Image (cartoon, rainbow, N blue to C red; front, side, top):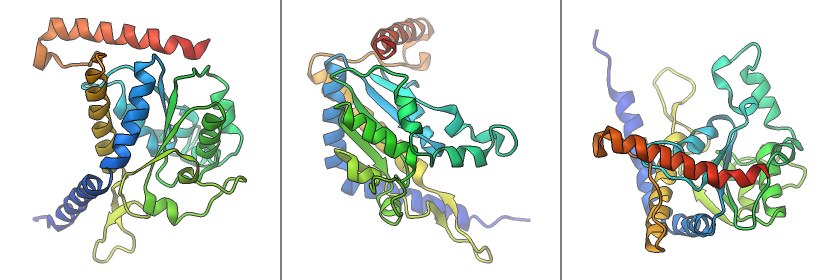
Length: 260
């Protein structure tokens, strides 16, 4: 039996459309975000990264992986992102409940010491849950510029849940739109009531890698070219291993400040 490829092609078309929308609409915000990140890193500060749920994915996409560099500080709270259990202990119900709790974001921030040159990128497709709003407000209260990465369409369609009455896009200095649709899922299947195939991951990955390239270019222009994690396929195993060690040592030196 041959499987009709129409649904896969529909998803690929929608994914391509997301990238094209980002190309058409996000270069300005990306440039603004890159300036904030470059200022932080060039001054010896950190760009802190935070996301809950599947918005953890772009946090890990920025650093550490091949083609990435120190200066970014991933903050991942496992109680909000441990999705593979699904049910039982550490299950999805618990994570989805906790990410709505106001006050928990400040508990997370209390674990770190933030410097005068630091900034924050917060990822949340909807941009309304209590924890991400707490983190955004906490970052602003500590004097850090805040970059929000959301689906603008989804966020605007969502009702503010935080007692402040604000959504993430109301707090941020710069808003990056991952250009995924409200509801995220993009493909309609004949005979299936609900759409499938989320698009936010495509948008997130596109935005953060474009941002990473912009920041690398700006740091290099300023005479501070970053140490980049690079595959041995490109530079040989020995040089790659040396560069990994140097990069991780550089990262360790940079993040030492956050623990006082």
